[in-house]
Image 1 (cartoon, rainbow, N blue to C red):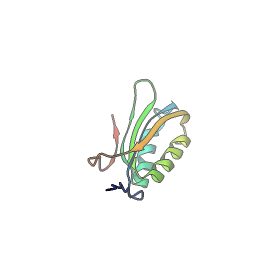
Image 2 (image 1 turned 135 degrees about the vertical axis):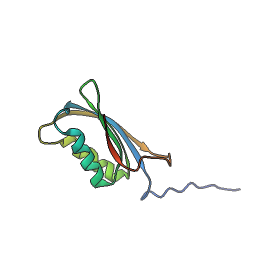
Image 3 (image 1 turned 60 degrees about the horizontal axis):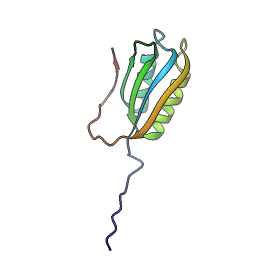
Length: 105
């Protein structure tokens, strides 16, 4: 009998965190705040304003870094008010991912 094992290196495994931030999050420096956090944590992806007044983000990185990133987003910059964040996190299996975190317009 042959047994196949799948072994994951959890220390270098990438995850993707996708979400939307609601509240007073536009015209308060939220995107720049988000980029600064992502850059400091080694996270790749993007952030952009949506027409409905929310902010969308997609972040790729190690799970622990993404959890810190999410906690910081809940705080927001000085003049923001975050009422809610809807998000999902899953294992990122694509080998082709952005090499930076960008503000999209």
